[in-house]
Length: 387
Image (cartoon, rainbow, N blue to C red; front, side):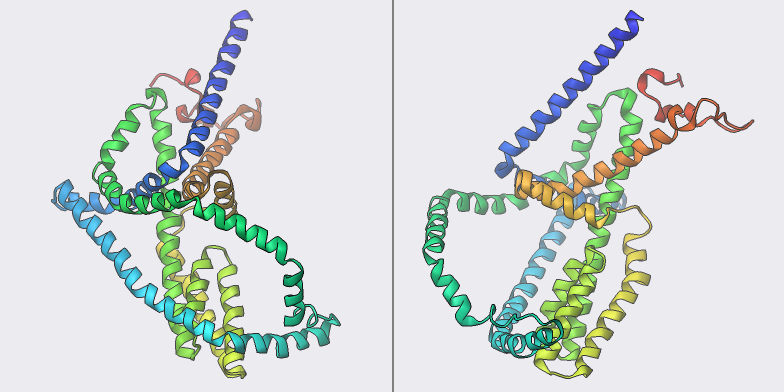
């Protein structure tokens, strides 16, 4: 009895030590967030590129040659994307600015009266330009104080800007070295894991990598393909802002229904403002209808597959919580941490379903069937049977 009590106390103290270590690690990440950001981003890029490096190594190339090829390809893709997207988005934003008076007039003279007639609300008065000007004038002193505070902060943040530039310059260098030494880093981390827990930790790490891979690689490709499809489709319909609307809809695709819904709303508004007929509205609906069919039956099954990914609500919460706690670094760490937590929760559920609390003391296995409670990977290290 006394021995059992001592074991319980020792177990509690060990858990307390691990909890204190976790809190200390979180505090250290919070303090070093500005410095760790490029390292975390480079680590994620190296993780994404390592499978290609391993494939080239299996084809007979050396590690250095494979890393150089993959790193060059990644740099060229980023550079090509910037060369294509930056001028394109610049033209689209210029078109939006030039078309803004037409959207404002349509909203004030067409959309608002239509809503007022059907709801009885008086919205035009509150959105009148003179009323808004008066509100701004009444609160100008307060706005001026806020603006002065912001400008003062920015003037004192010159070193922060220099730090951002330095992080951007360091990013490719750090990425190259992480990519080159990725296998060595994995081996060193694996060597620190207690031998009794190596099998289960390796299994959980593979599952976490699969979940994160399914979301990042697969869902990113789905977003990219849909953004291009929507943009080209709306451009073919004749919308001046079609490419911008299509890319926005593609970026929001990771949240079910939000991407196509936002794209349809923006596309319909753009068609009504630019043409004012239902033929172009029908063209917008056809573009998004075809895109949804292709996503559901081709893109998602082929690129994401049937692997268990992260729920969109969990993704949004993780990104917002990480940003609130650790800033931009927290947003970078949000998805990897969410993937690991997702895998750990499924493992905890698996352990619970194989526990005697769930199975019960009278739920014995059938004759000849293996005992689910006898799986050594589901037992605590102290209860494992010798292999």
